[in-house]
Amino acid sequence: MSSPPVEPPGYNKIWSCVGSAGVVNPPDLGKVIFNGSIVQLVGLPGTSEVSGPATEAIIDGQTVTATIRYGVVAVEGLYAAYYNQHSFALSLRYRTGPGYVVAKFIQVTLNDGLESPLLTFDSRSIIGLSGNEFQLEYSNWQLVLVDFTTYAYYVELTLTGPGGSVPPLYPTAVSAVWLLTPLQEG
Image (cartoon, rainbow, N blue to C red; front, side, top):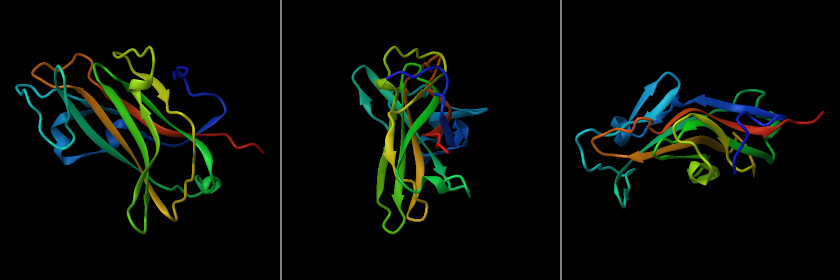
């Protein structure tokens, strides 16, 4: 699924955040840098292994994975029209470099803390992806209930790329993430 280089007409951006405004998992602090609006994965020079719960091994070496979270907050008047189900999509401005990006819009039940992913974006599902330049893509549309009286919400962003002693020229990065919903008629 590939999207046009701009947002589709007839849609509202109802929440947005720059990549550098997220909170990095403590074990991942040395794996990312912030530059303006961008959060970017960096290599780990001088190491052949990466440890920590967010790391996974791949066949031809090691990968470096970092998790960044973004709180999605209710804004008076903004979500009032969305307390019933509407179609939502998660959109990103990102660069894969030699890696990939996964983002999830997650709902947390306030009374018991149960977490449920509502939307998922995975750059590995995009066909014809150019890894060295920033691009705009969005997830599949899903019916989602947004209700800040019963739930809290956050976006979890995972950047994955090669580890090792030579950082990539164009590392995996995200400049912005946002939620879209169709414009309401009348």
